[in-house]
Length: 73
Image 1 (cartoon, rainbow, N blue to C red):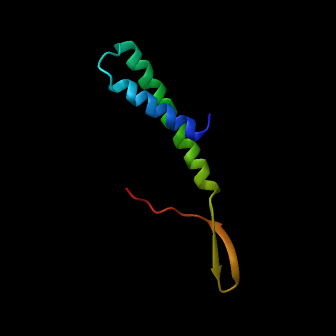
Image 2: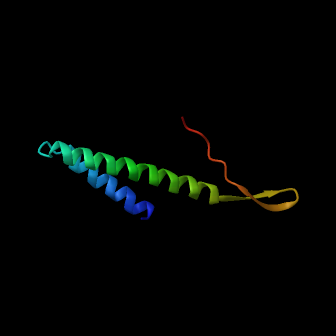
Image 3: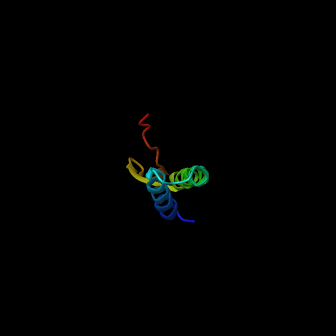
């Protein structure tokens, strides 16, 4: 499953969980599915971040270095 598919399914689940008429058992199953998808999406994002490289120009010319995202906690 691709990242976009995970995100779309998580959004679908969120909409389903907002309904008042959903049975408890179904809500729990959907919650567990969403939790797994969130973990999977996080892993995919971590892997993608490791692949992102930054092209920089220095005194010695151009160099490719790992991209270091700023923490926004």
